[in-house]
Length: 266
Image (cartoon, rainbow, N blue to C red; front, side, top):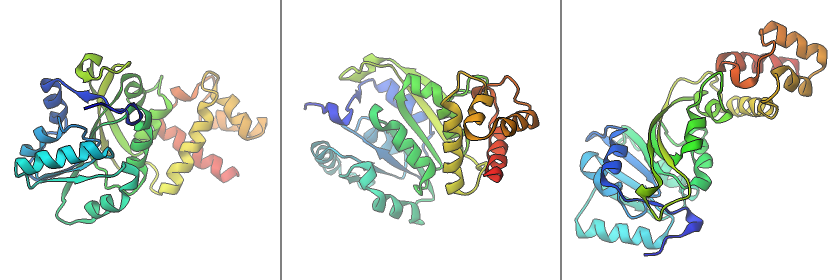
């Protein structure tokens, strides 16, 4: 079966790596998994015996049919295939989230590199019932998500505002078919109590921080001067003790407080 580059199809081919990936979430018989892009089912059919059920969202028609046929042959009742693109399956995901039968809902996915950021942002900041998940993404991107001060990348702020992110292990290119051009890594994301409750404010905060990161090679004062007068920027720098600091050196709590203070100035 030919893979489709447009869908970012690279399939795990190492059984030990697959089990190690599944073990990141330590599945139990009460867990319901949403698997995004199950592909040929390498993870899916090894996960099924260890959890309550798997809902697999697969965009590729041929792969979805292949998964369905295999499930039927094995008389598996705890696998549901949703033959849709993840972003077109909002109604189905909403039903899963609101189903009282799904007391423990987890996400697992080897995410296509070209949409991994978009999907993770959706899970974190939209009503997808996200509490915990394990994901395979590009290694350099994984490192950014898990970075910390004094070298905190913007992606680490996207996660850390509402969740924790752990870099679990690296996966060599050779463990995929076809072999991708980049090395991959597994991250585990776990939701926590957010530093900002309102989703609207969370998005506004990230836009504010994104502006600061546009000048990340310079001290944060230069970024603030793009938003306020020099006098106001200097007052903020002094108040928050940010002299000579770059945005990647500033802790998240301080950035949230700075954001709220700046909001009061507008």
